[in-house]
Amino acid sequence: MTLLFIGSLNEARRLSKQVPSGCFQFVKSNLNGIHLPDLGFMETDQENINLVLNGLEIKSKIDFKLISDNRTAADYKKLLRILHLLINGGIRNFKKERKEQLFKFIESTFTLNGSEVKRTSLNSRFSEFVNESETEFSENLKEFQKILFR
Image 1 (cartoon, rainbow, N blue to C red):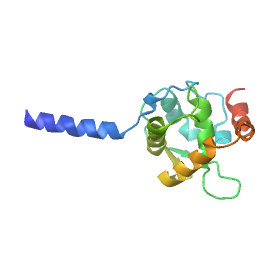
Image 2 (image 1 turned 30 degrees about the vertical axis):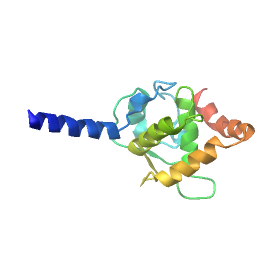
Image 3 (image 1 turned 180 degrees about the vertical axis):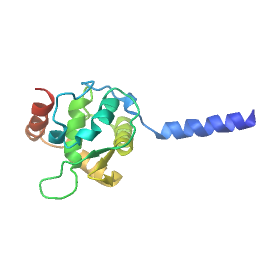
């Protein structure tokens, strides 16, 4: 009985550290018909992306490849913009607890151009993302809105 209790406790701790995509409701259930490289994903990630959008566990991390304008690293803010459009209600107004869930979700679901997500960079880019002026925010979303909502 003690071993069962300890095992259950350890499993509960492990699960509490994971944030599955199921804690977010996505606007679209799949991206069929969308040219995934335009969004920074490989066509080979189609299955995992559909799993995420349907709240299911992915088989492997999805590599986001859109780079920033002046770097070779993948652009966190572009990924945040895509997630803002795909998560019902957007992510811009996320506060402490929801933001932490989002960060855990991103860390467990994506790599950025082959590299693991860096929490400090993610936090900085999220702050920049939410503090954009309304005009800048709207302009930056347009490119992805055209791709996602044809």
